[in-house]
Image 1 (cartoon, rainbow, N blue to C red):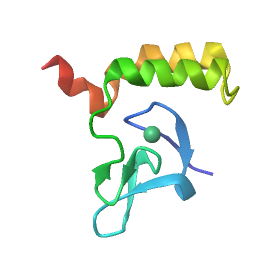
Image 2: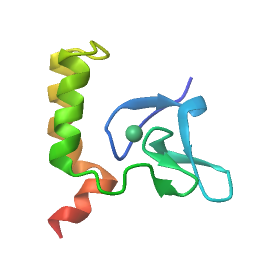
Image 3: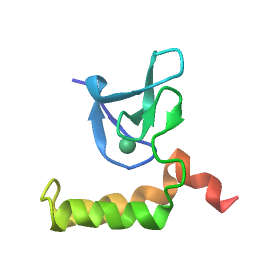
Image 4: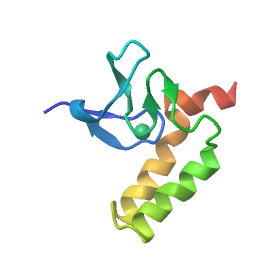
Length: 87
Ligand SMILES: [Zn+2]
């Protein structure tokens, strides 16, 4: 099974959870939670908000461990969506 790392939220996703382009083809850079029909589902999301979401996933919903959340947060600035902020 091929697993990609979403270039927006930093979470791993499988082909079935791939984002979609405007022409309905799959986008292997982003997961479906972040990117649908060629657009970000939350275009105003900031890096800081995303960090809070990841910590909530770990602390409140137990989707990931706190350690995993912190690992992802450290890598977020390297992802395609957030690298642009440093230009
Ligand atoms: Zn994502």
